[in-house]
Length: 583
Image 1 (cartoon, rainbow, N blue to C red):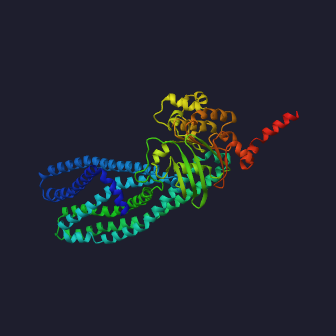
Image 2: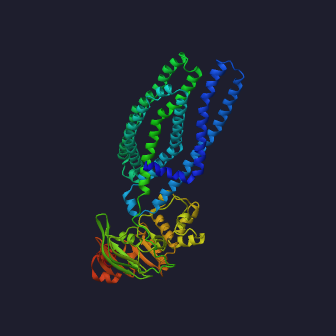
Image 3: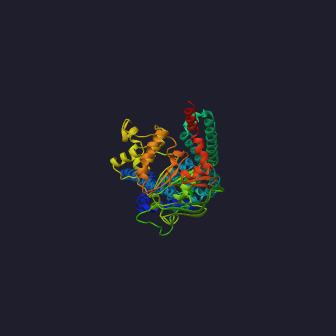
């Protein structure tokens, strides 16, 4: 009931429309309950009593009721559907907004396919309950109470006979509820797993084909699909077991009324019209019993779906703004790490990191894969909260900064470039939505992207495929650089952003960036010596610790790890020089 109450809470936002819908439902049910009275008078007064003058009045009354019911039904369906769609609109927006507020940790621990399942299938399960389940539940409740009152007022003895099996039907409904609820929960979980398998396969289809693993992926998907089939069949088996019993049991009411009521008509206790009307009312009583299984089925789907949806909404972000966060008019860009340690779960990523990057200076970070380079950037942007120490920007702990104010002043080119399914101009303007076409072109020139962009069919209006499909790795990186540059940030982060370009393009980008880097605090993460040699300070990481630091020339003199990297990268050039000397 807690989940149902939360779902109904969204209806409260559209109270006026919901009241209209319920009023129309009551009107529809009330008009339906008048029809058996008309039938009773038609049989007793017109057919058997010979009062023919009453016949046209009854026919006209029937037509008027039918017309009102038709119009009322139209608006009833419209308003219930309207309310359900608006509730889903609110829930969908609330979920999406909530996901935007989550930290990287949340997405590390939750699969995209499962989140997509909650935003689609689970929300649809809630919508179906609001649009159909609530209406049916209310309607059947009105019929059950109304017809019970009418039946007892018509003939108490016959009413008792007709309701004799009701307690047994209610008991069956409770048992059905306890069996079907876990079955629907299992279905929702398996559908999420199936969506995840599908999403991962489609997203990684190029890898699948490159390694000729289509058969493996088909088998993996088939396994999840079979589990989905089995869980749905199990729910159908439960449904098939209980629903016919409830239907048969409720139909026993008709048999009881026809048997006992027929004897009463024969004995002159009630009229034939009363029996016919009684039987009509009985169907209004039986139908709620027969529909009870269907309503429970719909309600349990909504409960299972609601539980999964509210699990997302109830999960708070571990990275949030503190009360009254620091929000200056302008950032200077001074960065300092003080004894910073950080863990991803139980895995250590950084250990006692100390570094200073005065405003306007350039710091380069090198190290092997997994050394902790990207973790430093994650800590600076506060994508994760560190385990120990402090990360300061302009002397203020990043945990005290307003998140938007911090990140709006940091431009980052990530190692894993992501482009949206939009035009090239729109992808660049993502860094600054207010930028003009001239500013877009200027940023593209700095990133050495302008020339290849203008050679494309629609130039800057060319739509790139999902994740930038259709562009080379180097082209995507250059658009990502333009996207960061157009932001005009105080802190610029280049996370191995020239790894996919050739040496000549890298040189062109570096020369263009020199002007942009002036006056900005810049962090360069790279594997190439050519990308970092001009930095004001170079730090070398190993296993999350700083093992070397200094300028390019200072580190070469130390003949440590940096010197080894330098020797490996320029070994072929030295061999080439020696060959020239021999010649």
